[in-house]
Length: 171
Image (cartoon, rainbow, N blue to C red; front, side):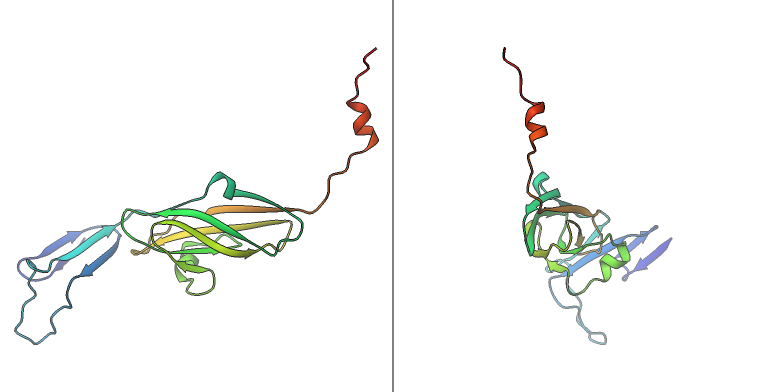
C-alpha cells in the first residue's frame, strides 16, 4: 500500500495500480515562497481513470468491399470515454499495448470523443486489415477495432452450364 501526503490537510491512500489524470486551474506556487495555493477558490481536480475508452465501427465499416483499382479508403467510426479521449492509433497489424502507447508519429491522430475519419488508407492487397485503438488522457487503451477491406477485381462470369441448370421445362 502506498501513502501520499500533501501536507496536514490532504492525504490519500491507495493500493493496486491505476492511471491518473489531473488538471490545475492555476500554476502551482514555487518552492521557497510564502504564498499558499488557495484550494477553495481554485480547486485541483484529480480524476482516477481506470476505464478504457471505446472505439466502435458501423457494421458497414467492419467489412468493406471495393472493386477495381483503389489507392486508398477512408475509415470512419466513433470513439468515447468517461473522461477525455486523447488519440487514435491504427496499424495494418495487431499491436500490443506497449506498441500502441509508444506510437508518436505516422498512424496517430489526436481526437476528441465523437466521430472520426482516418483518411486515405492504402489498399495493398486483395485483403487488407486495419486495427484501430483509442487512448485516453490517462493512457488507457481500447480493445482493437478491426476493419477488413476486400478488393474484388474479377468480373463475374456466366457460363452456359449455369444457365441450363436453372431452366425449367414448361411442357
